[in-house]
Structure formats: C-alpha cells, structure tokens
Length: 439
Image (cartoon, rainbow, N blue to C red):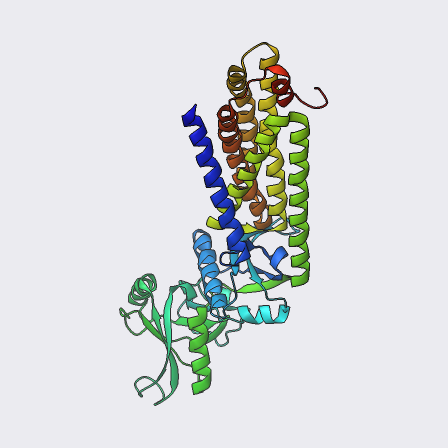
C-alpha cells in the first residue's frame, strides 16, 4: 500500500510543479503561449504561385524554397513569430493551385504587411529555343521563346555590387555579380559547357535583363547582370536579391486583418468558456460520483496542467479552434472516468470488495476507452494530414488532449483510488461510493 501512496504523492507533486511552471511562465511573461493570428491580431496574406515555368517534379522543391525565402525576408524586418507555409488549394474551375500563406502577428496595417513581403525580384536563367536571336522579347512571349528556367533564385548564394573594369563591358559600369550555391554552380557549369554558342537569357520578373551568347564554359559558379544600371539601382538590386530572389512569381489573392482588440476579446472569451466548463464538470462529478468524482476532478486538473505544459514545450500555436479542441478534450477526459466509475459501481453491486471492484471496473472499461480514443486519434490524424492550417491546429490540440486523457484516466485516477484504501462498507463508505441522489 505504501508504494501506491508514494506513487500518488509523486504524481501530485509533479502535477503541481507543472501547474506552477505554467502559471509562473504566464504571470512573468517569460514563456507566453504562442497565439495564432485570430487571437493575437495581425495580418494574413495569401499568394498564388505561378508554376507555369517549373517542371512538375520540381514543384515541391520550388514551393519549399519560396517558403524559406519569404520567411527569411520577413524575419529581416523583426516581425515576431511569423508563420509562412505552403498549401495546395482548389479553384472555382476545379483546378488545383499552389498557395503561400503568410501570417504576421501584430501587423494590422495591410499595406505595411504587403510591403514587408515586398516586390522581391524573380530571378530566372533560361536557354533560348533555337539559334536565332528574337527581334523583340516581351513578357508575353518569354515562355514561347525560351525553355523553362534551369536556374532560379533558389540557386542563388549571394549578389554583390561591383564595377566593371573594362573587360567585356563599359569601364566602371555598375554590375551585379551573382554567386550560385553548390547545386546552382554545377547546373550552371554543365549548362554553359553543353551549350557554347547559344543564347542564354537572364530575367528579372519576366523581363530580359541580358541575353548573352555563351562563349565558353563557366565553372566557377558566377554570373554578371548588367543593364545600364546606376550605382544606386545596382545596389538596390543586389540588396533585394540577397533578401531573397523568389524562385517563382507570386500573386496576392487575398488579405485578412484581425485587430489586436478582437484577438484579446477572443482570448478572454476562450479562457472564460474553459474555466466555466471545467467548473461545471467538476461540480457534476462531485455531485454524481462523490469520492470517485473528487478523484476524477483532481486528475482532471493534473490533465489540464500537463496539456498546457506540452503546449508550451512543443510549442503549439493556439487558435480559437485550438481552444475549442482543448475544451472538447476536457470533456473526453472526464468521459473515460465516467465509464470506469459506472463499471466499478456494477462490481460493487455484485458484492465484490472495493479493491477488486476498482480493479475489475478499470479492466472492463479499458476496452471501451481504448476503442473510442483510438477512433478519435484516427480522426485527429486525418484532419491534421489533409486539413488547412486552421484545421491542423484543431487536430493537433485535440489529438494531444486525447492521448494525455488516456494517461490521466487509466493511470492517475486508479492510483489515487487505490492509494486512499477506503472500503465501500458502512454508511460513510456507501455514501462516498454512491452516486447522484442515492444515500
């Protein structure tokens, strides 16, 4: 018996410690919860990616590079906890398109948010189809005249302003020297080696900056952009390319702004709903199940502390949907205890001792609890895998809640009941293990 009571004491102390850590981290703001856009306020921008010049097998890599580039660019402006993610969406015509979703907490000025993303240049290197230089190159004919881009902004390592020393160009002309990464260096070296004598165009935002003839292989992984730049223009171009030349063009298709006051109201409403919900559940459990209900209430508080601690450690981005999922998981955590206690009452009614009734009640209820929780976890996994960012937040919080509730219901509640060692005999024992209005 002393081992069980020691285990119960350890569980209580650990749970209290986690609860105090969560409370103190919020009181001191040393580790606040990570709130989503709908709770903290801010701006969401949704962009459509133009992948017409990208080979099908390179779409995933291009979108990943686009996400990393935009995230790097936003971070340069010091936006707190930006969220940049890609998403495949559907159109009204039934087609699919690749989208980029940018969430900027604390930025409620839509125009400022758009400027943070900026008109980042799209850098492309394309080989001319055929050997005849076209008389005119417009943005509408680029895809017809040139092959898809073999090198894009994702292959760029750095861009530098330099002044031409008079070899192969105008003396002291401002130029931008590009240095490619390892992948870009190899692609550029192979392409120039295999296409000597052909035209090779450099494009920024679909506009041809330079279409030189490849005179020889260029193995060192560098290229020069020249275009009658002023020193200021060349410097700005180099800076923008270093911020992140986009691997594919993007088009802004929707914006959404949430005011900070609305976010604060949503947080307060969510907290109030959670507190009232937990209080109502505890009162019901105390009234209907008495001593086991009190045990379940303590286990529920430990469950809440443990889940909130996980939210801080992972960390989970809490949204209004996530808070709803958390409140829902609280109800499911108590649901498992209800199944257990009902089974235990049946065993007591059959004349078994309290210890045996608790043991058999947990054993008989476990199969139902296991099956219902597995089905809930499967649902959470499916929602997380196929859902949008909002649905993913709900699914993650719900899934974590279900997993932790199984632990607290099966392990914590049983340990506490065994640790008390109270027999359901005599008037007091029968009252403590009774239920509802029965005396």
